[in-house]
Amino acid sequence: MNTIWYPHTPYDIKYPKLFENEKQRISKVLGNVIIEHFGSTAVPNLGGKGYIDIYVVVNKKDLDKTSKIIQEKLGYKYKEHASIKNERLFHLRNTNKAKYHLHLTYINNPDFIQAIKFRDYLINHPDEALEYEEIKKIASVNANKELTKENAKRVYMDTKQSLIENILSKI
Image (cartoon, rainbow, N blue to C red; front, side):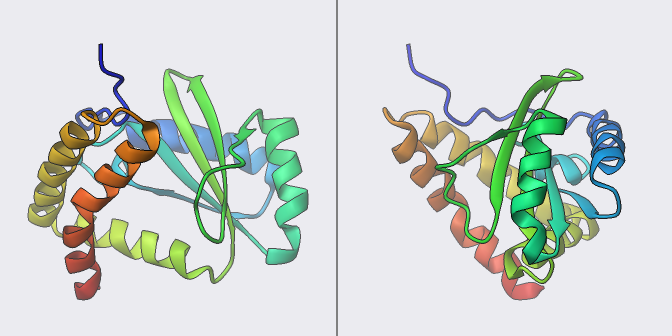
C-alpha cells in the first residue's frame, strides 16, 4: 500500500469559519499581532491538502518569545526540520476537525508578503485559481507515487513551480 504524502481534497466552505475561530483563539493569547489566512484554504473553491495555513507576523525581536507562547499556551508543535526560509512552522492537528499549520514570521518578510499577494491574486482571478487547482491535482498524484516523503515533496513542488512562477510574474 502506498503512503499518501500529499492528499488533494476539495474546497470546504467551512475553511473561512475554521480560520476565524482559530484566529480569535490565537489573538486572545498573543494580543495585537498580524494574523492572515493563506494557502489553498484561503481561496474560495480551491482544493488542496486541506490544512488551514495561518501566518502570525510579529516584530523580528519577538520571534523567540512568541514561538514559546505558541507552543506552551496554544498547543502547537514546532516542526524543527521544516525547510521554510524566514519563518518557523508549527502544526496543530485535529482541532475542530481541522489541521492547522501556523507560520510564525516577522514584519516585512518578503516570503510572507509574496504569499499574501499570491492568495489575493488567486481570489481575484478565479479562472487562474482553477488552473492552479488542476496542477495541484496532478502534483498530488505524481508526489504520491514516490517512496519517500523527501522525494514526494520535491515532485509536488516541482510540478507546481512553473505555474506559480507565471502567476507571480503577474503580481
